[in-house]
Length: 397
Image 1: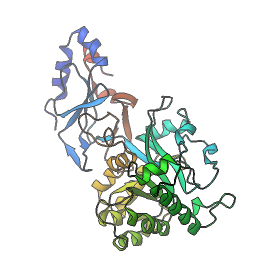
Image 2 (image 1 turned 45 degrees about the vertical axis):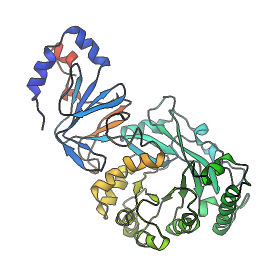
Image 3 (image 1 turned 90 degrees about the vertical axis):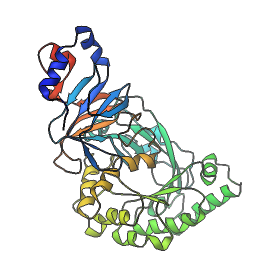
Image 4 (image 1 turned 135 degrees about the vertical axis):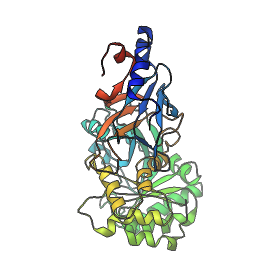
């Protein structure tokens, strides 16, 4: 696989001067693994990645001069940082407060704690970004926000889609609506008023003008069907349906709603071994229906490992492996509105990367290292590392 053997790399590193060794600490990092996850979700061999200035500088076999080489063991896989959607991690319970069913201008990021202990657990599980969602206890509930899982860091916030809710979570005996039908009425009224120029909400006006997309929380398959019936025909804005129970039967009926390739995206999960087979087959059914599919692990209410468990179960019940890898990397990045910088290993993108000991779809694969903005923040190559500075001193890190 590698053009240069380990002794050759040691010899190359040993010839560097002390000044080069000092510069290597702040210079480029060259990561070598057995394979990398490509944008289409497939695994490619004979490729390695160079990081510089917090970004992916090159995808090539050779390390550039003065680079620090991080060499990982046979079988290791370099993946884009995993992204979990619909997360509540770090968002306090006080954010669940609402003054009514229509609260479009709320900000989930105001309740986010960048020091939450769960962030470190998520990062060590390979999750480098979270799309936070407002609590779905209203019909229109503000905008999502994407943050890094690097604990203690001032969050680099990317505000994303507006959150709409269809189904039981939107009901409220105190503030209303008190039923699913009432919730749909409230939603249709809010969108219709904005389309007619009668809304005083900037957020909803942006939405119906097509300036923003929406994420629609629809927990059950029936709720997702109602969302499609209510929203798809309007063509006012693009949206993704976040359904916790997108069953195989539901995916087989998508054509009844007029949904075609690329029209609507779906997010489903988390999955567990206790779930019914029809539920676990939902992601594969959505893939076969020709729609884009992302998976979620529910960080904040589920263990950080749930995202990869969901992906593994999805493949066991009919989803292709390439689609499952996309469903935890590039597809979540697109839905979260950060695909221009995250979600795939491409030159120029932010270097949020994870090294797994094996294919991340294998539950026995361990996280060997995590890079955020091109900086090694967890784990590392250990004895497999070859750097100018360590070779100069006759040892390895």
